[in-house]
Image (tube, rainbow, N blue to C red):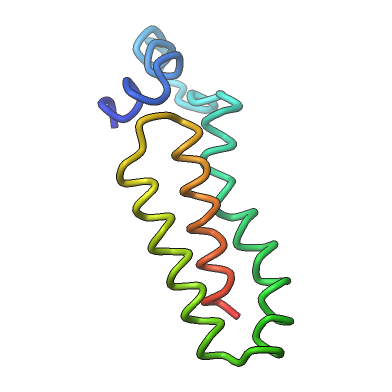
Length: 103
């Protein structure tokens, strides 16, 4: 989405508009955009490994509540994000929530 790219990833937006080729492969080759995208998946993977011991110790109900709380906080951080680092932190919290709920 152009407004999202203009606000958080202006260099990617400029490059996208300058590229007039029909090949759209690797159009978004920004390390920051890659970190934003992959942070959720990496956090979910890591937290699902930790969540098993938390679930064993405190039970499923508390573990899922904690995952839901992390997901809610991550959604709020992403919703009110003004800077890229806020988006990344929000995605990491969303990933932790997904990992705990997945467990």
